[in-house]
Amino acid sequence: MNTDKAYLLGLIIGGGVWGNAEDNFRIKLPFKQWGSYEKEPNRAGQISRDIMNFVSPLIKSIYGLSISYDATASGEWNILCDGDYSNLQADLEKYGIVCEGELRKNAEINKIIPHLVDDNMKRRFVAGLADTIGSTKNSHRRFTDDKQMISFEFPGGSSYYSICALSKLLHSIKCYPDQMTWNHPNLHCSKDPHYKQWSKGFKLRVLSDQYADFGAFSFASKAQSLKQNRQLEKEKNIGETCEAMIIESPNVSCVHPDEYSESLPPLIKDGHYLHNRHICAVMGCEHAPYNQISALIATAEQYINPFPVLTKGTRIFIASIVQSNKLYSDRTYSDRDIEIAYLFGLYKENARSLLFGSDTSGYPVNEVANAIAFLVAAKLDRLNGNRPRGNMDEIIQEYLAANLDATVKIYIPDLLTPIILSLDNHAAIVGANNPAVYKKLISKVEDNEYKIIVRSITEDDLK
Image 1 (tube, rainbow, N blue to C red):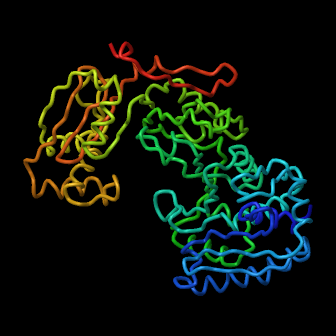
Image 2: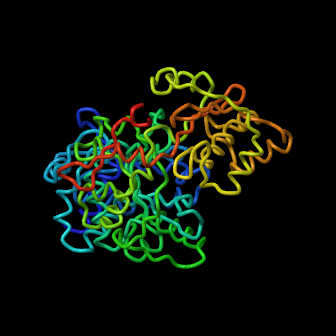
Image 3: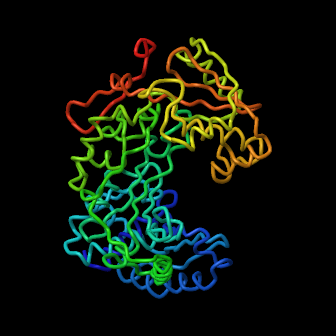
């Protein structure tokens, strides 16, 4: 191992794609519009120079392969490798990398990392990943432009263990992950257990300032993009280790049926996770904030809901959910027409308050407001799928400006199962916060003190 090989291994694992029967190999650069030669001709020209002037000599000298490239108008780039692949295949197999399909979906990097014996090799390996899957789009930020990020992005189906190993590797060169998103329904689909398209991949995001100080790129186009993004910031940002970061109280998350998915590794499967760093603790990462995770677990009933937090759809779709769930369909509902302006006023007065319950249990008014925003956005023809286009407050205010006395019908059950809100052809389900009851549903796993399981709720639990 040397620094050049470390870089190429990062580049190959980040973007390598084997064809059928290992008869061709390419390195995919998923730049999309970022690298478009129509929208970003100067950047596209630099990418082509990076490939031919830097990557090409490295691959030729180390693996004896000749390269060319192709690029689409939308910014999809491929480094095309030609020649005898046997040296490359032997090297990858030595490190436990199977030469099949898209490598970043399947590759385990645990066997490579011990061979990165100094910080230079580690940085070069990370640079290879960064040049392929380290996105520098300026939309990767923490809330505002003041905190720009580089985002290492892996597709759903990638190895949890590789993501954990990469996080540790980034820590070792002081590129501390500021944001982590694991490919899990509790994190990609925290409100709606009926949403099945949760497998949106993994993300490790490092503050751009931190990466500029301790990380590296070899593609000049990526380095220039990072520099441009940092110019959007008002001041320099300093990264923190994961164990030093303060975890804010998480939002309430639903219990998703795919917590039991066979696509999840056994260590993760069946568990319910309150925070991204909760998964880090279950995986035993030395950088996990264990004390803070223990504190969350001790009050986990405050942050879980065995029902939907919020499910939106057509009236027919919502009716089908109610009819297919015996706990819902066995309820006696009272229906009330309630003024939208009144409910919106409650939300503006105290977004944390509860409806139709007590001080400690009931339906969160902020989720009721989200449901109303969806219903009136449908009336205003301002939906993208089930997502309102625009700010929630502004959508409701726009509707009320022309419909001040408008009401929404709410169906309230005889137990604290979800309420149903309905307006014309659309409806929504909002589940109750009920921590005293939900605490009974939570259990710990014997061999892992940080892993919790949430069982299904029954009618007896609610009585």
